Length: 355
Length: 162
Image (cartoon, rainbow over all chains, first blue to last red; front, side):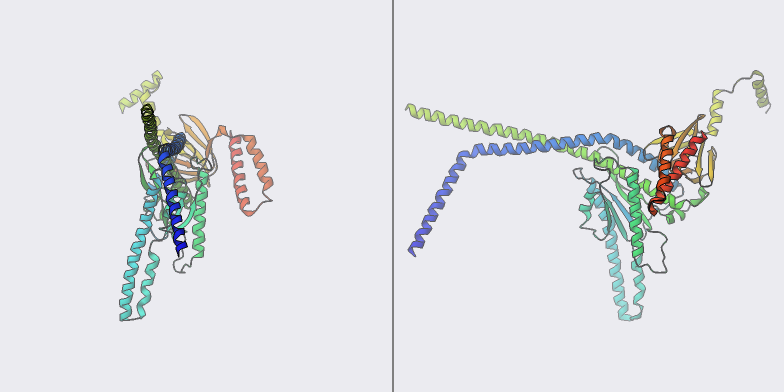
């Protein structure tokens, strides 16, 4: 028993000794280490400032080209959409709706992507909630009916088919990561890497490829789904819209939608015959309108991304500059205090030596 | 009426040209505003033109002022636009031409270039290459090559007209 007790004393002594030793070390070197810590922090912040400055420069260089292509895209979109305004084509949301959300691949551009993803969640989740309410109502009705008589249960089943069923196509990786948890069942396809490696402005060719792929995906979906013989669909989707940020100023943008017309909506529009047609052009017209609207939306989104990135990077480099100034001040202050302390020590030692 | 006749006689006698305002008035009747744009460039932006000519499925179509509203699909090839008695020629890959009820016109093309940008000999070479590739290619590529051959032929046709 005694040996164990002694051992513990030894250990305790050792522990106390080492702790005191390190404490002494810490007290001695405190001022120097704090300066070094501040210097490493200063270096890291200077590096981040370099990065933000260069990102701002890149964004400003790209802005000119983006603005040119945006002006052309606006012109072409407006001139082509006068036709749809004149024939009064509807942009109502109906069953089998597609949503195309336009965002950016890279972050660090303010709240551009969050505004789109918030709107997307709003559109999709809102309709889901109404669906749930209706379903619960039909269920409660069913229960009542089943209590009354068991035969009429199948009447309410057809109502499930008529709810709008949103299919979501996402352009840009950032929106995917923000939305993927909330609406995983609705996402159909994700496209990224628009503008190539240089992240330049979107081209019409890329837009055509995306449109083709969306049509292909929806067609596959229609072929694989079990469609009743009574409602045979002519269209691969009934309605749709594009969600994107419309560029207003260098500091402001607005979330807007552009409709995706289908052959049915064009043919059923009320003022269709204000125009004369020599042949059946509606298939090509629908595809071309889809591509042009998507091109317009993509170039607007690209412009907002660049301008807000420029603004955000400007702010962050300004903040970094402030922090750097403060850190330099604190370094100087601590170094000065260190020197004065040493001077006091020396002078007191000299006084003692004289005595 | 008498006054009108007198003035006409006067004009005939003195062989004076009609006044400047009269010229503008007659011209504005013959002209209409045109928007001609492609995704890469905006060629004509709400400018007054006299005549537009392009190719459709039912043959060539010419549009003048006072045309009733139509929607037409443009086939690939030449688009001629007469502006202030100058004819501008463009090569278009395909698109749509809409004459609106307010008599203005929109031409939207997938791709368009002025005719000066296009090299005739290069297109001829490309045509020969494409025709040689056509038999030994898959079904998907065959459709693409046939579209390209049609386009090359229409470009060469446009140059021969000149």
